[in-house]
Image 1 (cartoon, rainbow, N blue to C red):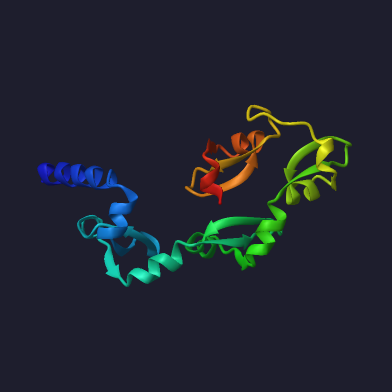
Image 2 (tube, rainbow, N blue to C red):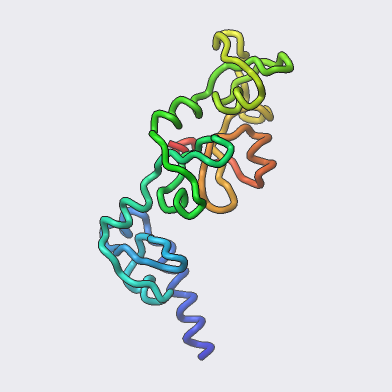
Length: 175
């Protein structure tokens, strides 16, 4: 029994090292815990007790969409995560507009580069971009791509990402 558990863990570790391109070429759409759809190898899917479903369903379920939360804030989320969290799917233009980095003068007269919805939340208005000084990645109010603990990504300030217990990742993850 112990050997089979160790073998299973070894296989899972080995399979997780497969390149993403290889998974898509040889992977299947696997329905796993809580009806989560993932592209995995057939062996991994069977090992975790998943079942194979049509590949197109994974492509749809894992596509990033624009979701609106109960505070009317928008976020890019994977479709199935949006549905799981009970968020409303809205037009991609809404995310493009609200998550666009602008030069903002907040209600307390602070000038900084933040996204439009954070500017609005701070009671601010958009001002000429030339007024904003160049920010560095280490500045607390510099906008970065943040990887949240639950595995999703979003645009946040350095300070906001730290407060949410996230970590800065490559900006390509937030597109």
